[in-house]
Image 1 (cartoon, helix red, strand yellow):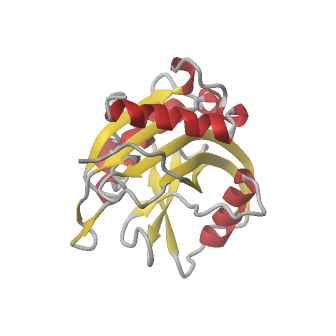
Image 2: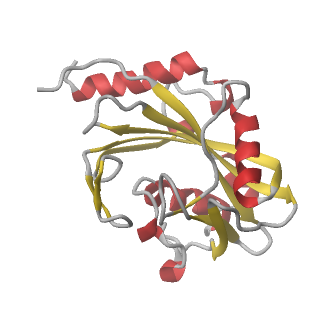
Length: 227
């Protein structure tokens, strides 16, 4: 029987380049390492000597060869692999970038590809041009909603840039379709999504300090244990 205990968190970034004029999103096909065979934005671990924003800009440049100059802070993902209690919660800070220097280019780790980001008005993407079936499960939940805020019927770039989300997802382990192997970061169970504006007690993400973020996710975990 599982017993509640607080879990450490590990900081990551995730950046989604958006071409506002042509309504496109730049995704990267992961060529090696964690997430190999999947499509995602660009990002990675935040180093000890840098801020979250600095880490986002660095990872974007390392993985896609573009230097972001206009980043909007859009969300925090708390991802928890309950099948392995020794793993930290992945705390992933999500940004969109709409202006950059340089041109996207393939690297040893990622192959950038453009996709239409014009959604229909139910939240899914026209003709399913974005390869959601080859993305992480939680990304397929929140990304269409963010794209709709930018490009949907009632959306606009100005509106989209103001939207911020929090997403807590747990995973019970399942087969990773890209590797054919059991993977603790698959098999999504609990899937809690909220816009910051609709969640009492969460400030704008720029002002949500680390200790308060940890307290929020631990409260959600305690509820799962009936505490």
